[in-house]
Image (tube, rainbow, N blue to C red; front, top):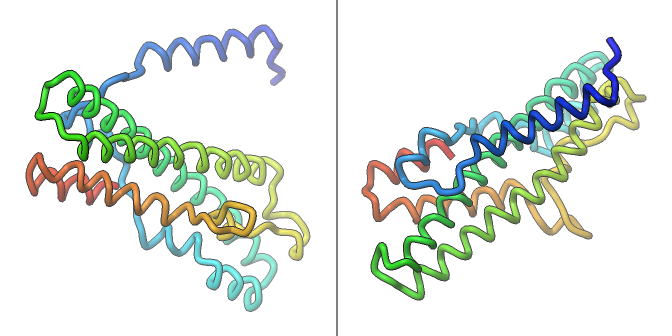
Length: 200
């Protein structure tokens, strides 16, 4: 079915309006844990394990490699989407905490102010970096990279590394954000801290 440019424009405008309507500018602790999307770290580490990926490609048949690649492309995009969503939640939460701190809603502390700014920056950086990887994954999925010649099938595991020399590890960056968010949660009680940590 063909979609006209006018129809596409109307759909896009509706999506933007819908997103704006339900956009939450502030996020308190009551709006944090229920919106976090749980990450299965065993599955995630398996998808982004370069050694395992190379072993599969050396030892398995072409059919198995293509099937595994297809599944991992979808899993990788899903994991990065969840992680980016969680980073967005933490970003909003830290900004709300910072706003309350500066307004005098809680005891002012230069150290706390610096910590909140750092968490917000970490979250923003992760969202930006993960967005680039999700765009690439979507392109590979659309172009059916799993059906390319075996020697040209891209490495999914390598997507975790960014920078000129791969010096940035997207998974480690998220884990650092996770630790920072858990530290932010601790003043609200051990139970809240543990629940946030379990969901990130």
